[in-house]
Amino acid sequence: MLSNLLIQNYALIESLELSPNGGLNIITGETGAGKSILLGAIGLLRGNRADTKVLWDPSKKCIIEGQFDISGYFIQTLFEEEEIDYDTTCIIRREISPSGKSRAFVNDTPVNLETLRRVGSELMDVHSQHDSVLLGSQEYQLQIVDTYAQNTAILDRYKEHFREFRKKQEAYDRLQAEAKEIRKEFDYNSFLLDELSKGRFQANEQTELERELTTLENAEEIKQRLVAAVGYLNNPEQSILGWMQSVVGNLGAISTYGTEYAQLRDRVQSCLIELKDVVAELESEGESVELDDEKIAVVQERLSLLYNLQKKHNVTTIADLLQIQASLEQKVAKVLNLDEDLAAAQTAAHQAWEQLEYTARELSDSRKVVLSEIDDLVTGLLADLGIPNGRLVVDHQLGKPGSQGIDTVSFLFSANKGMQPRQLREVASGGEFSRLMLAVKYILANKRSLPTIIFDEIDTGISGEIAIKVGNMMLDMAHGHQLIAITHLHQIAAKGNAHYFVYKDHSADRTVSRIRQLSTEERVQEIAQMIGGAKPSKAIVDNARELLSQNMTERTNYKLDL
Image (cartoon, rainbow, N blue to C red; front, side, top):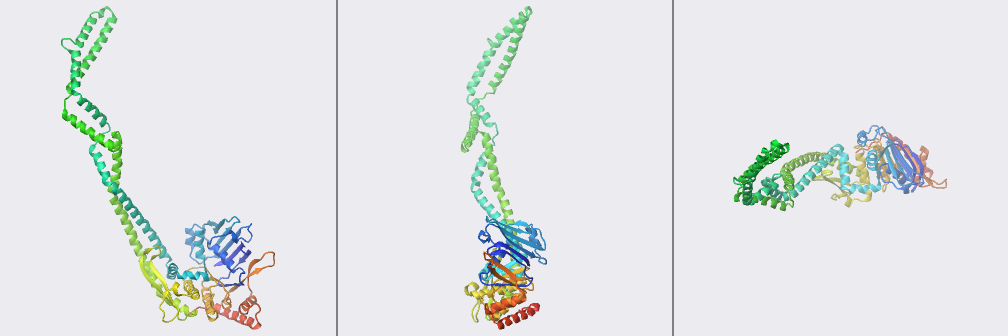
């Protein structure tokens, strides 16, 4: 529950502190005194956006701080998820600087607005007469059903399964799209790869083939010239070898006459030996050279294949072709593996779908169980709230899994006998919306572990006996929750455990809004003025005193009989 509220430098509030009671807290005051300002400050604690225009003194920062006793409310997991220190006393603080910068803290831990909203929504539920329009929204109607059915855990599980299915299905769809694009080029890439693979090219093959073709195409000339060269070197009648042999002989004859002759002989002898090796090699080369037209054709065909592929792929070397072949192999292999990848992705998506379907049915069953209860309870309360022939029917339809499940609910309403219930937003008046919302809030009160409920003039448009019943409903709700009600009805004001009065103070140079808790006698006077105006008669004051006294007894043991 909200144990203390501090507001500084906000709108018409210079400084204000409020320590509400644990039961039903009533707030009254004249129009424009600052009741809505009080709610605006509380809204900041729940994550509403800030504006520097709200600063009472533009040169100073605004501070809104709420202290909550959350012992007995099982929300520790929320603090753990948001990495906030948990304590049974939770302090939420909002600061707005003159520059417009807004900061939020939970237990002195800086938090963003999303986290603040999440924490704030678990601590306070604020409802005004303008919020009744929410009741016409099917999304809000489904939230009501889930809150009444206490579906928080199963709904969270469904949402997780829905996100998981979306993730797996999107991965499968994305892979299918990729596969479609890849397969468009698969046949062509396979053809190119087949051409290159059949070639079985080796790294140095092109150089060797080109050299071999040159030899084969000039074989006749090569052979003739090799034979001629051998003839010049080693002709039996007259040859270079013969002449050199004679030179060696002549030098050998005079080698004893001087070392220089011996050295010359040895040098010529070495040349002779080398020349004999050359002759042997020339003869061998001459014998190896073949005049082979068929082999020429084979080499030409091989080179032609190579040149054509190089031209096709716009490259000039076998190394480039081999690199292209490796790239094509990867592309083709990826397509060949696609079937396995697609099958795995499809299986994962299907399993996620089955899990989602199971949880969706479980959630749907939990919702369907409570629909008739909601019908009966709200219809019964409508009679107490002055709509004796009012009837609420929660229509239920099944559809495809969405972010909130497979269910669509519609609140159908009729206010009069013999009228077929129709969509609530089409037939309900503003007053009927307000009473329906109050009935809904009442039946949900004990279904949710919510410390504080705040009503802002939700009683607009009612009076008399209906106002008393609304007050009794609030009193009953206050047995399990802290209730703060801003009201203009004396019947409801008299029900409160504590009564606070909001007023404007004009004593200084600048008007400020203030709030104070009324004593018993002050409550009598305030209720009397709510009944009879600014100057109530003694009879009205006595009536107010009696009304307050009666309600003190009722507050002890009142329980609305549904």
